[in-house]
Image (cartoon, rainbow, N blue to C red; front, side):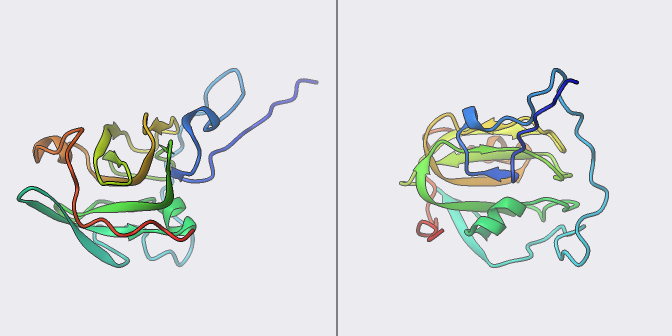
Length: 174
């Protein structure tokens, strides 16, 4: 009998370094299965606008509102089950410390770009992520924050690696 060991990421916004973020140990990679509905009673299912508290971030003259995900449950849920994002809106993931991060797109229906930021708000990497993709997107460098926006948003607004993002909340307490 051949046994299969599954090691699953627990969230779209994992607290794991890329090396520890393996989706499965099987010979073939799993196929991402689109989640057409989310958990019953989940207010984010089908949402296109912010569901929780927001703050305004800025780089130079560019400002934009982001929903805050600053505890484990909010970070794990992220933008899952949403049908879109309001124009120029996103989500900031706030962590208690600066370390390697990795995200995936389980149950996430919309294409996103993610910017990882260090504790001083400097962008350390930017990547694009496809809907329902179970592969991880690593930060590449230690990060305390991650900002998700609609795919291509950072490039369209001239936000690049090295840019300083202002208005970030303090580190999470959990």
